Each structure stands twice: as structure tokens, then as C-alpha cells.
Length: 477
Image: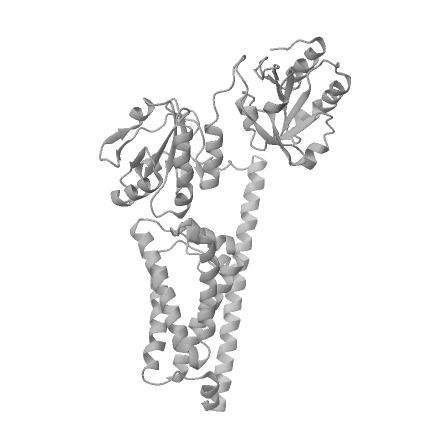
């Protein structure tokens, strides 16, 4: 019996030690798993450190006989927490990846995950209950009591088990490596046109947006057509109450609904219980909060997972599906831009960093006409006209308006361009989009009062035409 109890403690200690080390080795994956399980955003950082630390402490406590009961109690508490989190997510129809052993093993939670944790609970309970009858056996005492032949057989069996485990791990590693090679081969084949490209996420752009009729939190029914009456641009965000990534995004959504109400309507489409969603909406002051029965609207828009978002404009799909909080923020930064400026309109207030990191307020540069050049060092068309623009810089008349280069890319890449004029960085290209420039190279003229004085010149020929027009004091537009 002592041998069985010691084996149980070894298995528990090995399992929790492996889980703790694997979680520490993949800290980013651990944080993402906690978010997926619904942990509040402010707890994710501390929990990603404390959880594997607790697993390691429990594993160490299981080894000495004097601490074995405390180690078993600790593992039982952790297992109850794991089982509760898994059951809550499964009850809500969600199956996040458990990430129990870091990058070594990760799969969506399900009944097998629950069964494994219940088995570990039983092992911990055996250790605790047996200790009520007799002190837990020590490894040294038990080993000394073994017959010599029994000790040899045990050592041989353990060595064989280790070899089998290493062989299985090597086989699994080899299969994963082959899988990665196959994925790379598929990517090469797609690049060469030998394999159809992976379809973009979501419905094709410019196809009709699927209609829906969903319940609002006050019980009224809301349709896509009704939402369009309040604005032709809608950002649909799919969420749910038990989604940690959604919770991290909701404060931004509330701010967007207030700040950009004149530009687009932001609609949240959630699922789950009415009460849980009411609490979320009230806690963040959210509007336009709708409920789907299951995920019928998400499926119609091919929005898999939460949080996801898609832009609808004039009743048509206007973007691919963006998955994850960061991708949704990027989509919102584009969707919230005002309509492109028309000739005669005043330029928006823009503050952008120069190549040394200083923040440049473009309003402070007004007082004379200025040519804005939208640039990207990685753009081949930009590079083809680079020398001509630099020649224009050297030869421009004294009364010619200064050039302002608004560029993507790193400070180093832009320094290598060799511009004599001021260069500011706009990695997200929001300034270009504000003026109606949809690519690079492009240019536009501002008058001394900061109003748009020309049309947007796109492409080397039109940009150079705008630049050369300044030698004669005129703006092409």
C-alpha cells in the first residue's frame, strides 16, 4: 500500500511540476488562456505568475512526507478552481484551449479535460484520507524496506517507462515538425499559385450584409434596417459576457460610442443570459447592445469567436472580419476617420512624431502654403520617384512652399531616404486617409490658412505635377 501512495504522490507532483514549468516558459500563452477563460483583464498579469508558482509549490510539497498532506490539499484546491472554470465555460457554450501544459499540450476544454482533473482530484483525496489513518510514507523508508530483487525490478520498470515516454514525446515532436513543414509547403504553393489561397475571414466586401432581428436589453426588437435609419455606417462587434478579451475592449467601445457617434453607429451583438449582459452594459455605459439566441448572427456574418467585428456601410459588407481586441482597435481607427477633406476645407489637427521622436503639431507649421507628401520607404513607386523629388527640393524657388513628408516606416528607413525637408511619421496612415489619399506616393497642397488648396495627386506623375506647379506659384488640382 505504501508503494501505491508514493506512486500517487509522484504522479501528482510530476503533473503539477510539468504544468507549472510549461506555463512559466510560455507566459504569453498563459495570459491569453486566462483571458479566454474569462479572467478580468486586471487580474491576468498577476494570475499568469501566481498560478504556475502555486503549481510548483504544490508539486514540491508533495515530495517530503511531512508536507505531503498540505501539498495534496493545495492541488485539490487548484483542481477545484480548474474544474469550476471549465464547467462554467462549457455551460456557456464556450470551449477555450486549456493550455494546461503550455506549448507542450493545448486543446479545447471538454469532458475529457474534466475527467482528467477529476482523476487527479481522486489521487489527491486518497493522499489526504490515508493520512488520517497513518502518516504518509517517506520515500527513503519505503525504499529501504524493498527486497533487492523488487528494487531491481522497480528500477527497470521505471527506466522502461521513461524510455517509452521519451519515445512518445519524440514521435509527437516529429509529427508536429512535419505538420509545420506541411503548412510552410502549403504557403509556398499558394504563393506560386499552385494551391488556392486561404479565403479571407468573413463575407466578401461589397456583398449585402445579412439582415437580422435581435432583442435589445429592454426587450424591444431591433433590425438591421432600423439601425441603418440612424446612420449608413455600422460597426458590428460580436461579444459575450464570459470573454476576457471582450471585457478588455468594452471600455474602448463605450468611449467610441460617445466620441464617434456622428461618424458611425457601434452595435454590440452578444449572447448568454439577459441579466449578465445587462450588468456588462450598465457597468460600461454601453448603448446599442443586442442579444442573439445562440450564434446565428455571428454565423451569418462568418464571425468566428469573440471579440470579432465587421464594418457595414450602405447595407454592404465594408471590411473583412477583425478578430481580437487589437485588430478591432485597428479597424475602428480606420472606420472612425471623417470623410476625406474636400477642396477648401480646413485640415484636421494632427500631432505626429518626427524622426527624433519630437511631437510636431502641424497647425504650428501654417502661415504659408505647404505641400504634403504621403510616403512609404517600402513603396516601390515611391522609390522610383525619390531622386526627382529630392532634385525638386534642391531646385525649388525661395518662395516655393515647404515640403512636409508624412511617412510610414521606421525613423532609420526614412533617414536613409535623404529628404532635406521635415519628415513626420504616421504608421497607421490616418493623415493620408483624412485627406483622401489611399496609397503612396500621394500629395496635396495646403494654403496659408491650412485649407485644402488642391485635389489629391496620387502616383509619381501627379505628385511631381503638383510639386513642379509650385515653381510657378500655382497649385495643380
